Image 1: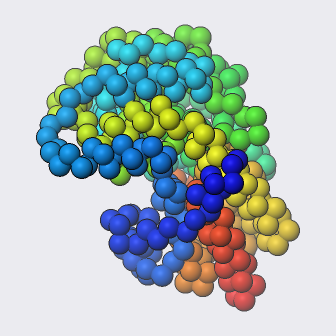
Image 2: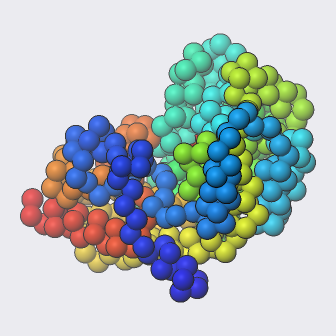
Image 3: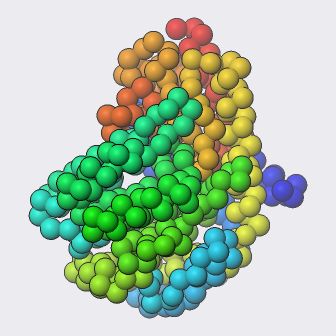
Length: 393
Ligand SMILES: Cc1ncc(COP(=O)(O)O)c(C=O)c1O
């Protein structure tokens, strides 16, 4: 990474008072505002400089009327997917949607009926559970298996659940919070199962640009038989720190599935992009390669620092190096405290805000998620504060 890039990422940027959930909502979620915010999955890095310049230029025009749903951001996304992931998609497979969570909701609403079973693999990103509950669908879980140093899909259990009539599976790939980058074989097995039992897979690939150590993201649509029954959800917002701009894509090669989701988007009047989101996506996907490479390298260094620190100084906290995502998943069950006591220790004694594992389902009890997309100084301080809090308890 170039020295200027490192300085850009190292720079401490105060986000307080910027309508920012991560730093401005601490009081509301943790009961105190004086915490080091290592929770919400956005980054404390400034985005690609050319994105900022394009937004400033557009803001300067001072007329922000209704936006056309242009092809520019789709073409830019197609270029990114082909260049970075070796995946070719057609322009008309791509639908605009305001956010990936919104897209999950639209897919569940459009592709399942009342009482249909929707499958998720906990511990997993909280809104996945809500998607089934919101529309009165039957929530079916197939928990991941924790082997000690990694997490695996339970294929026997998955097959039973598919055979029992699962209509739609929400897949997290790479997986938040366990940090797995699913292998091609694992994903192909999953697609084959869905094909055998007539289910649809909605693959949330919002973290796909963050993979480390040669773990390569296999895009679901690259698999045999996937085009017919898989929908891929993507967004530049996680990769380039644009979440407040609300922009994402639903990529569905199967025209019937695409039509159903498109109708759900239209019913909700969610088809008109935000002008700034659209510009940001286009520029990020066109000019963001060097920035992205640097951020991935920087996050990997934060991860390596964290893993080495915990192994040496706090071995009671388990931390396997995540293969993907900028989120690290800490096993605090070895501290000999209840989940609630660890939460209180982190908040009231260490003064750090981590996500409670319970946000990811009951399977997350004893676990906490820490966000590593932040200047190194914050990672160092967080780990020091946790160490001091544990030693002085
Ligand atoms: C797996 C996953 N999906 C979706 C989202 C949110 O996506 P959006 O802001 O586009 O709704 C997140 C954010 O943390 C996430 O981790």
